[in-house]
Amino acid sequence: MTENSKEAADAGSFGTEAHFHGSVSKKELVEAARATVISTADEIVKKRGILLGHVKLFISANGTLKLNMVDPKMGIDMEDNLNDPVVDGEIKFMAATMGVSDKELETIMTHCLKDIDNIVKLNFKKHEHEHAHNVIFEGV
Image 1 (tube, rainbow, N blue to C red):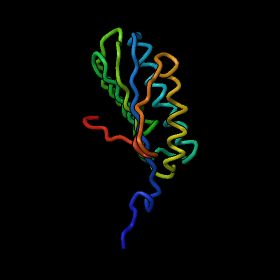
Image 2: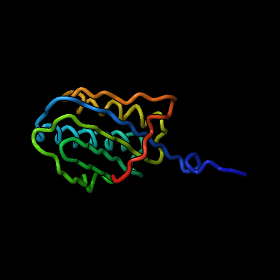
Image 3: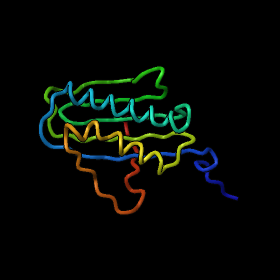
Image 4: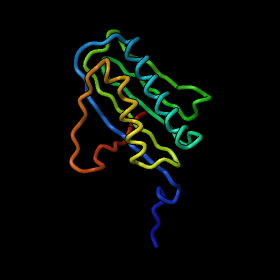
């Protein structure tokens, strides 16, 4: 008998990648990235009551920015090595949590990315099938 451990754990996950071109101030992009992670965690908490999982965002441009949140009460773990201004980059954004379905998580995260999309136009990587946009975050 095989069991889907993700389903048994009531776990949901979603990840996406996007590119942006042009220049934006480091301060503005970092603030938008922080707002994206915070709003995503807040929406998960509204659905679930608590954040059982994590939210990660990684920006690679002329330098890197790594954001990780496992508990809104603990805040965001951030490693900022971006140069100012930030020019032509890639964003990887993912979350894994319990009690929120893949589809619910995708909806939440897509909505929360508007904080970043408002300052840099995100060009999402094309995907070949329904779940190809779920990505593995190496080194994040």
